[in-house]
Length: 231
Image 1 (cartoon, one colour):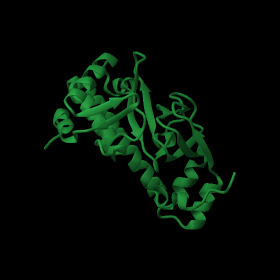
Image 2: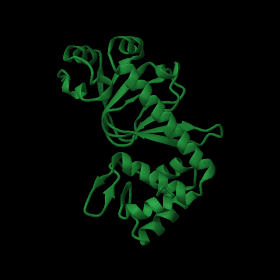
Image 3: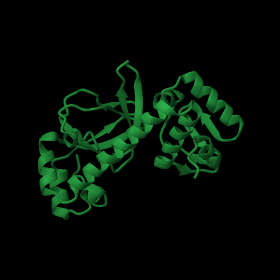
């Protein structure tokens, strides 16, 4: 495998304060792997033996409820650390990470975590900042499930994906990774039937365009109104 170039990491927040020689050290310890869409990179409860950086693609983070239901609690974008169980003082992964699209990630043995946080300026700060943001997002999602009407929950879920990955097209703003109605039901704690009914109604109203594994928001302003997020 060709050597990974330092430019892969030099602009990413966990590594942006480092010298080129330090980035070289980090890359020399890394393993690069490609994951097909739908592949589980690691599973909830399994031993946390590696930590990761997403270079390309998108990931779904899935938690299992006490009742056995699967909930998608957040998505991870390129350039972000994930699987950072050591930051939580855990030796098992707290959630399952699944490739939402074809993805490429670097990983390192968890035994290097303490070296990275001690020896590379900015790495620890950015890792704990990322962790704080993720915990906040998960709490927001769980609060929505407990307190908001279904229509608002689905609108909020779509807006989160648009804000994270949206790209402008001639039709509107396209969610950049494949997403199914089942995925949305798992993000919002509602049934597949309810999600299908809402998306069909919104498509008739010109708010979204939904085809198999592909969603374009055609009227973002109206979706914001439905979510209750407008100021």
